[in-house]
Image 1: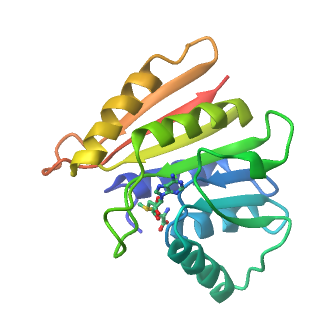
Image 2 (image 1 turned 180 degrees about the horizontal axis):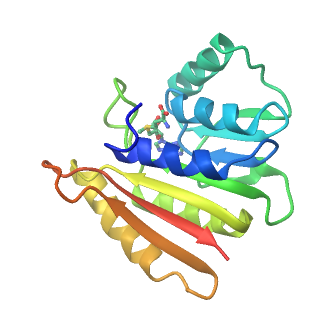
Image 3 (image 1 turned 120 degrees about the vertical axis):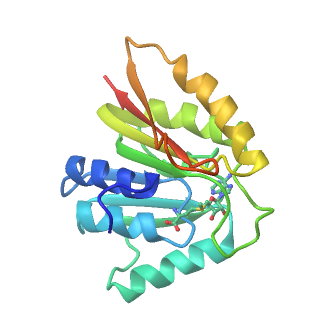
Length: 191
Ligand SMILES: C[S@@+](CC[C@H](N)C(=O)[O-])C[C@H]1O[C@@H](n2cnc3c(N)ncnc32)[C@H](O)[C@@H]1O
């Protein structure tokens, strides 16, 4: 793995220095399960991972990947088929999550028509910010090389840049010398 080079690596580097065994994490777009597996390895068997995706194919791929790596679905590894704007599966009081990640867009090698959409993503983010522990982080990776990604970036950017500084710090991470609309990433830290 390159140290940086793209936003996914940057997300891994930053979350890798932050996550500890036993923490609780939400992967709001688990896709093929790569990010989920990375996170679960860091939080260990005691740490709780919720992995959500709207597509059955994605949940199956994630399940397969975990099985290949010797993880079983249990109270600490929950794969959820559904849209991330309904977080009722969390079954918890407030301030639970240490970290949430949204790796937006469509399933690589999957149906490009099924992609995250800004209104749903916004609804989800609003809820996640409430569920986040003090000191918790949210990573939002956005692919602006296609039209719906551009629109999503516009709306998410507006929402995130106006979050009250009393409660959140928000950073925007992007590679400024890469050609062809490189993806960008926001990182939110709850105070
Ligand atoms: C770029 S992929 C995620 C990549 C993934 N994290 C990985 O490591 O392979 C984006 C995923 O978002 C999912 N998605 C789209 N809309 C969604 C929604 N409303 N709720 C949850 N997942 C959604 C897609 O099905 C797709 O699998």
